[in-house]
Image (cartoon, rainbow, N blue to C red; front, side, top):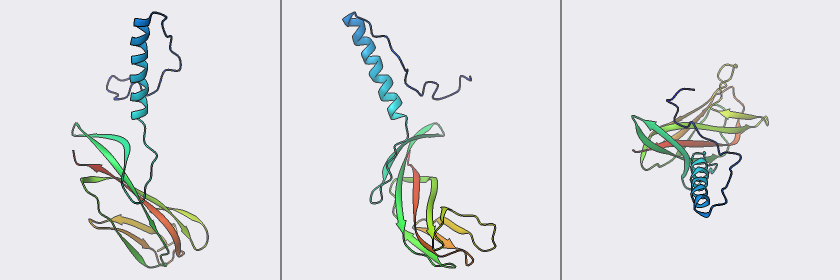
Length: 158
């Protein structure tokens, strides 16, 4: 294993011997607490809020600067084939997006990832984000969309 791996010990030990000596026990309990806290804090947080942003628990090290990422969910309703929907958003402390993804339900009652690339001509569902809007464009040959959601995750300013 390379010595350049950031998280060489990402997992908790499955067993630990606690000494009977009270002084040594205190040392071992303190180490255990640090191990548990470090392992828990290095996991992605599974909170996907709609009305506020949430910290994802991810740490990005771009140019040797630690940056946290945040996430927020945007729900949308029906979009006709051949139409475009603009969903306004506001993000403070923004640096750049780390992920843009989502899902939708079509009028033919199938479930598609967003963005969606179709083998059929003009049936793609495009998702892009401008400085003010999430833009969802449904190809003219695509089924109508009934509803869906978009998740934005972004890096905070360092």
